[in-house]
Length: 241
Image (cartoon, rainbow, N blue to C red):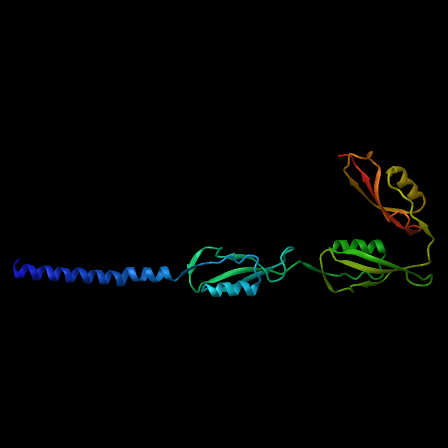
């Protein structure tokens, strides 16, 4: 091989090596760096806020709280949603947006003092609450109706919570012993209770194949309890399904 051809081969090799170095610097190395800077987003659903934040920091990400919404199942501060979703490949340092639970929705307790028991019940139901224990006092000269409530008006409670009432009546009523109504005809019992001055406040029907339709299956107050004259009664009757 001649010296000129040898020099030509050496120069060509050096040029090729240089091109490889340039290509590695321009394309290959940045691609490798990019690949190494990506991480997988962890699953955050069900974690509390501090645990989710620690998990993101561990893999090189940050957390941003997008919003907080009421949720009937998850307690306050638990992650409900995330973006990007779990197992997404993202650049290190990228923020992950989460939606946190505010817990069960709360409502403001209305003022029922001065209302009748029925009015109080309707107002509480409209606000997502219910009547709890009802205590009675008697004062022929006092104002008739609800005279106290617990919790007090303006306080916040979760939906479905009970409000206890103190009800004042004009004079103490005669009490009767509640009879056993189970197994009797709903029509006859309802007529008899109405004629006696009682209020059949609610009748619920339950499908069953073990009783004649219209037969009483359950009652409230239970048999044997004392109920004031004019008091309200709830019944459950059969409805063959």
